[in-house]
Image (cartoon, rainbow over all chains, first blue to last red; front, side, top):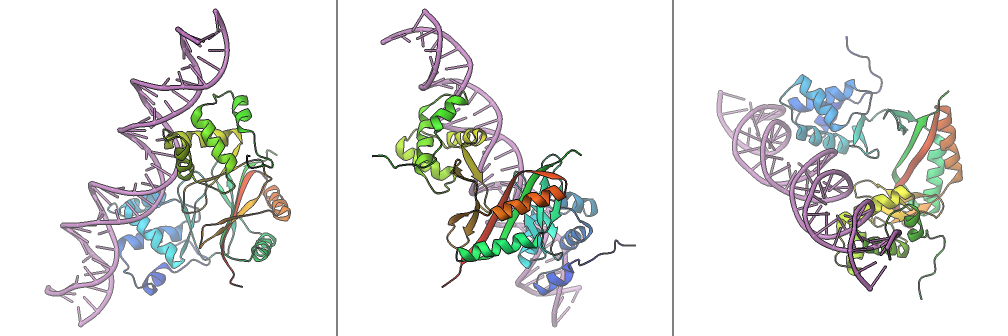
Length: 142
Length: 142
DNA sequence: AGCTATTTGCAACTGAGTGTCAACTGACGC
DNA sequence: GCGTCAGTTGACACTCAGTTGCAAATAGCT
């Protein structure tokens, strides 16, 4: 029984469409990504990959993440003071709140904010290609 | 005749208050910051500093930026795919739009967005310590 | 199975920033 | 103005995240 999935990108299909080879390391890595609903960094992905196939190298993880990012299959987030973290693309757009005490990443979404961003960019004569909104905070004790 | 300044932090006073020494390298660096209204990175500050005093080292620039940041005298911005850039604190809070073609940094401010961020954090049970909002875009051709 | 361009693992490299340490110096007391 | 000495500096080694060069391995074709 596999974990049921909603809106998971079909990585193998995307790789095929990108005209690259479906190699063993790439299969292992996209398998891990399909299983993950957190925001692992390259080294964490590498560790999970090694548990499945101990010959996989960290360089290959980096190369594969770059490839997948270029294909739009994953998103890269460079939160402050740490390595890039990755998540599957395909869910709808959201921003992040990072818990400064635990490092937890909470996703949120605000159409109002997106809309205001567009208005601001337009007023400045720009077209937004992408944006980054991160809130860094601490849990209010109840 | 010196460039007239609006709301420039008095770095020497802040350094004194922080209980650290007013050394020659620190004087040169804060002098450069007072003169700058762009967002230079550590290496650019180093280059401007060397032009004034060729004995200053890059390590000292890094150390001084960290010191000033800790004192709240400057802000550090880690825009994507590049080194940290710095700007004087003391102006009022703003966010940044980065021109993807030129690297230009445009400052903007939206109270509405700030307010919405607070609402979102509150709804999630968090208190915002700080946040980061960056728009990456391209100039609309007229 | 055989061919070959793509991909891999390894190790060496890069860029940004930090740590170590002997030498230097600013701020205080005299 | 001069000595003292903790704070600071410059040089350089080091870390960390990520990239690159290259010989060996292999996916995907026939």
